[in-house]
Length: 72
Length: 222
Ligand code: SF4
Ligand code: SF4
Image (cartoon, rainbow over all chains, first blue to last red):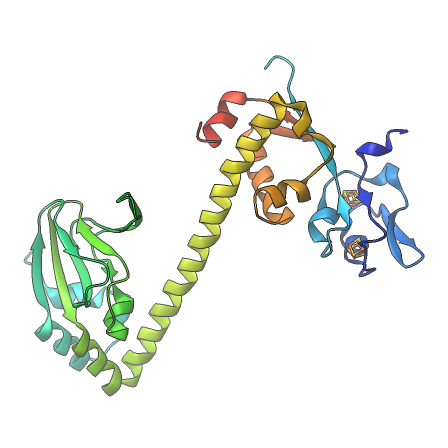
């Protein structure tokens, strides 16, 4: 693992604690820490971006890079 | 087979299952109109003549921007009706119409339509249903238009990003992309998925790999 940059980034300040992301995460990677959503099981995360799309406050962000496939 | 306006009308959603009184009143008031290719049928802002129906041919509904550039909103063909809204509210034409081919048309005057609505509850209900269907269609169209343009813009951005490392990496998220393109992360996700389905790109966790740049370029309309 190690590289935490390429993981969903959760902002505790922006999180309202609505639980939408936790309920919608297909892999169960998210959970609660003191009333706020957190990435409890990063190894489960499939980077599907569902949490980012469902969060009503924009508290979750999934960074990405764009690359050319080899041979292109 | 000779043309029968009654048979033609019965195929329109407005008159399905209507009693013959309404149909007869319409047929009686209908004005036939021929237009050759390129001929203007009506202009935006003019008082509407009524509901138009195409017997045969093609008609474009369009708007002009201040520079005079034309933007076609819809193209209609055989059996289609158009300018419904102004026929019912008696207002002005919301856009321009012109024949794309030699076209045979019929116009049903506004006052006859309004009279039938007042007299016949079943016809009035049918009109409401048809108009509701149109509104739903327009909403879908707006959705598609929005999505379409977002997809094009996302494709362009991906091409820029791959050439400029500064535009990609941490901090560059769908949310940021969405703000840049003035839309929502959900729409961005849908657009990305749509592009992925074409085979132009592939997702691998945090990596978006461009598999076929030529295809992505064509999606980006470049
Ligand atoms: S959806 Fe957003 S606001 Fe709600 S708990 Fe998850 S991160 Fe917090
Ligand atoms: S990206 Fe998908 S799998 Fe990962 S935490 Fe969000 S919803 Fe769960």
